[in-house]
Amino acid sequence: MGPIEQRRQVCWLNQEEWEEVLGWLYADDGPETVHLRDKGVRRVKAWAARGALPHAIDSTASLVQIWLRDSCGGRYGMSDLSESELRHQYNSVFLRFVNGVVDANQKGMYAIPVANIADQLGLPAWFVELRHAGTHSALPSLALFRASCQQALQWLHTNYWLLQKTYVADVRSEVHLLLTRYKAARKQTLKGQAEASASPADKSLSEITTLITSDTYSEILIPMLSEPGFLVPMARKKRVSVKAPLPASLSELWTPALAHFDTCWPGFSDELYLCIMDILNDPSNGVDEGKNVDAYRTTLVAWAKYIIQYFGKGARRWDALLESALKALSPDTVDLLECMAESKPGLADRIQPHIQLVKLVQADDGVVADDSILRDEVTDADITYLRQRVNALTKTVASTLVRNSEDDSQPSDGAWKLYSADEWRSCPIGCLPGGVIPDLGLPEWFNDAELLHSKGILCYPSENTTFTPANPEFMDVDLATVGTAEAGDGRMDHRDDWDNEPDENKSHIDLEQIAQRVILL
Image (cartoon, rainbow, N blue to C red):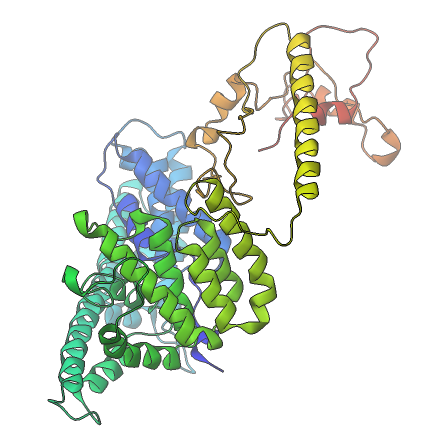
């Protein structure tokens, strides 16, 4: 089984998102930063929905959450929970934290005392005593739990978060140094100043593959290769001009390294190509080259073509490669698609219609002036028929808009807008104009139940209507008696009058009607 199939799945998108959540969870205590820590807790919950979380991350989020429920240790007002509730919640979170740390190191046939494992891990001894007291003795005081929460967060920050962050930074620094050594050694080999066999360049590549795993090369090695100084030379005169092929000096310098990485990690070339296309499609993903940005981008385009030509036969993700080329149309899109068609003859029939479509769109936008496109396949009669269809559709839409405007007594600012033929531009399904992927996340104010209620999005039952099922035969309980409990039995009166108007003839409300009035979030 190849290394690519043994990759460890994580719940975060990349290292940048992981470090962003670290900053949120450990933001300074204060009324103005509470929302950041709460945002970090919510992001960790989203991670947990994607898969298994490391125990340290789960414990950090749980400790921060109870700390916020306690109004940051009582510093910013009283908590909504009673002292007894806070102590029990602190105790539950703290028990899970200590047990999770200790149980992960119970690897022998016989159980090792918790105190011994805690001492090996550098866990404070009083954490074990507090765990024992919370389990077998009287519940510790709230002040003691607050102190333990702060020290537990500090221990997690030192022994997990900071270690992980430092490790990634050290690996990046070491990989950057090894790539620099490889480049210098490879240049000497090409100049005949060093032997090709057992050269320092091969040694540097072996050290890189030992240092990086199949889990980390896409986040560390690939972005580093696309930076100026490696695949793209620092000197502007060594870069590629528009429409020019990749110089032999660059291909001979880096092809052995790319081939070595692709052998160690099958799919490496696909990931490198996709990273280059992400930079080309969204300049904000790349580096700030200032006036040299055009030469930087043209060199990346040349590398993208070279990767398709040299590694295309072994590509595994052709659908992703094709999608990245079509995501943002540019003058180089056709060249990339033609390279794909040449490298993968089986895809030529699928890619050719895309090539023709891109040429038509670019010609319409003034990018490419080629009036002979599809002239042999599309006749004048076909064009006339299509124009008639467009005119008929335009008249239908116009008449519909006029009819709707006459029916509306007041103009409305809707989310839909009809663009003219000159303003409208095509874009992939699911993307905004320009190929931008929309952010479908709900705003944070959707977490405020009172605000949703005031806007009419969320409706609460009031105390005036008795709920009765539309078909009582499917219910074993008489719901008409649920809301009429006596005052002392502790049950709430779940009755509601949706119209706020008494109706003596209405004995019950249909459940389907209720479902239409309430939006469950």
